[in-house]
Image (cartoon, rainbow, N blue to C red; front, side, top):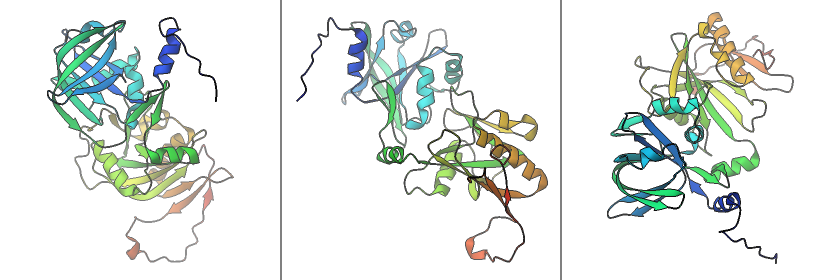
Length: 345
């Protein structure tokens, strides 16, 4: 049995003490409030816990050295949003002092106090008590109302983000998770989204859980982005250089004209035409090439399915409109499959 090495907490390096505390895995919350001058302030906290059911009390801890200390030590109301695993970038932004944080603050929803819309859970609180605790203060909140969502939580362990989901852990071991996304064309413009704090736009997508139907995944995803759409046909199958997952992008169709609604989450949604050169706004050579190919094919009125191959990728032309499998009557065709490079597919 290895020898136990004890450290004296009062005399040890503060970093060593903090690293030890990081052995306790937690969730991640975003705490937000409206300052007296009307500005929005927020910080990320994993030092959150429930305190009492009757009355309904919760607490978060805030460092006295924090720039937000003066605000949160005096505000009468604040919110606590429990973040989901899809809100990792937002958590990172709220933990910084960057310009991206200002943009993320602007996108917060407001109901008395600002809060993160689309989080796993949100609690609106009135201040119950402020307790001095060394170099921190404990902010006790009386929960006045709350709402809950669905999804997996964002976790934090030993200084890094982790997933609580068994499916995600298994996929990480396999190094081959599956990400499903959709490309929606609205009058010659494609829908892209941008997460709070991210400099890049992206084709809407998310990781698929084991056994999750792609059609339901995409329908729910676009609903949360303010668009009613259904998947049509598989448009592109690829793996970005450096990614551990395979990405499937489906063509999306919508029967509704009122697409441009406000998204339910704190993400930004935009519609971009060919003149906007949206391929310059996304990250990854495969996503860039996909958007370039889409506008070329749209202009030609002929679409194809791209898939990765060892020689750089291929595109199989698609003819006609997608139909139910019971209506499909295949006929002999001389239409060839042609090759495409990874940069120009």
